[in-house]
Length: 445
Image 1 (cartoon, helix red, strand yellow):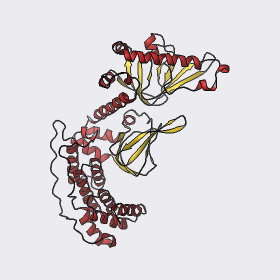
Image 2 (cartoon, helix red, strand yellow; image 1 turned 90 degrees about the horizontal axis):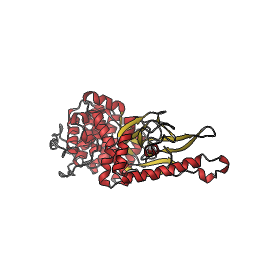
Image 3 (tube, helix red, strand yellow; image 1 turned 120 degrees about the horizontal axis):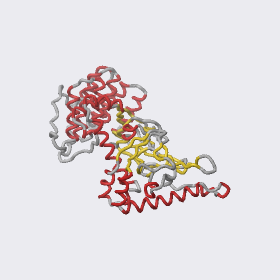
Image 4 (cartoon, helix red, strand yellow; image 1 turned 30 degrees about the vertical axis):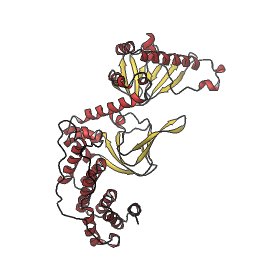
């Protein structure tokens, strides 16, 4: 039976809560392949379930050190996290986390080089000749810990490389260790939804291992936007603003996820006040990259100039029910949707209100009034918490004067929207069904 088959058998036994038999299978997998740290971590969980807390911590620690040696930093953090749940004050775990942090931030200014690992408290060489799957009870536990606590001597991190560890490496060491101890680690089954579009969520998610699909509901159908792999971070804007996610993330395969909740950040911030601003800066940088890649407004400029455009805007957290534009009043500025949505509506002379469209990420509102100097032609409301970038009137006029391409794009957008308003308000008896279909970039302001 090969390594993957042993692991699958062990996972079946674990699901059936046959923890002793699962321990034997996972430990045997590690005996055969010391670099099989997934089996080593699962064996550690079995030890914890069997009440062998100290041995579980030792096995988790060996797992974390092996993963760190191979530059699997998020998985090393996960092993430390699970061990800290069993022994919150364990010195060796926090020292390993400090080494993870130093490894991730090694090239940052002022960071120390990665310190060497501590010598093990107990010397295990892992050289057990017996097939562990035939053992039970104390004999199994004794032999298993010899295998699980033995170091993985293979693999060696590239001393010149710097593994990507966004956000975490920006924290100082003590804040990093504090946060790892508080955040949640969980497993997610294939086809399980991690984060759902439109539903309130105050979690930032980090995909430790596995794969997930990102979809959005459009015209009654779920459309795939892309796929995420290990190391991906999502949900930071929802965590900061309370805006509901604008896409659904679903596990494609069995996956492992870190969850950082607002309560975790609040607790860490009591001792490390810089953490909320670091998260805000991180989210802003990610928003900037997404906008520069996807927003039609930014497509009018060469890539080298898009960052400067983003810096002109200020961040606005819009609350449900708020009106950012009011029909018949001058627009206070240009709104650019970052996350969430805005609904464009206009009073119908025949009575009632006509919904002209919904604006989502990368789309703008307020340009018609700003360009013409006239009062807004429609009301723009916030149906749910939404994050937006905002450019006040004077800054807008400075922008369109300095960047003719932006003015041309907004004028063309304004013309299309005015045309759609006229069509939407035509007498109903002459409206054909096809005329009611709006193109993806709709709305007016």
